Image 1 (cartoon, rainbow, N blue to C red):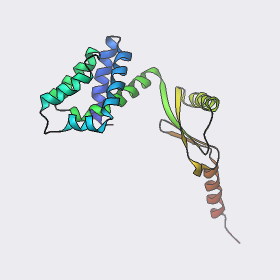
Image 2 (cartoon, helix red, strand yellow; image 1 turned 180 degrees about the horizontal axis):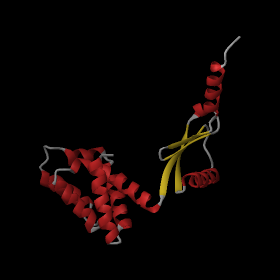
Image 3 (tube, rainbow, N blue to C red; image 1 turned 120 degrees about the vertical axis):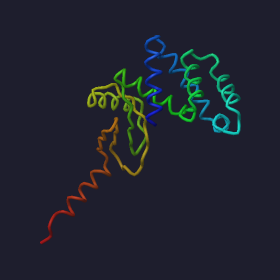
Image 4 (cartoon, helix red, strand yellow; image 1 turned 60 degrees about the horizontal axis):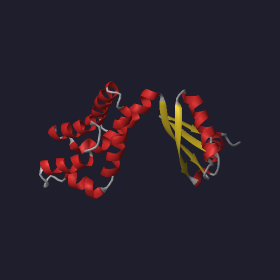
Length: 178
């Protein structure tokens, strides 16, 4: 995520917070993110061969029912020729909202899929470790053999069998042979 996208997201957040519109703007940005995920739409918006006014109109039709702040963001990005960062702003805005609320996202890697109750317990445990409310995305990685690898923010908690075996191998290779 670019520094400029973070700056626009912060400015948008501050404006939305002052108008008590954070939820509305976040919903608009989520909808916009879904529209921008379509490669054909994104290509049309970013195509320099399409006149800027036409590109602006195409996007304005997508956000015509959005909050005034979201529509203003689109206008500002077009006027400043910064439209290429639009696809980064929803993620930057959501990350800022989570940070302000004291929430964190993370990834839990396991060899086999976990049940919802197990994920909930891991979220509670990760929340206790990080001091924040944590929501986890599950990733299955058969190479772990067993155990769990949990990443929350920049911190990695690794209690996988694969990691334990690698550590054992390292220790065995360090032992002098007589």
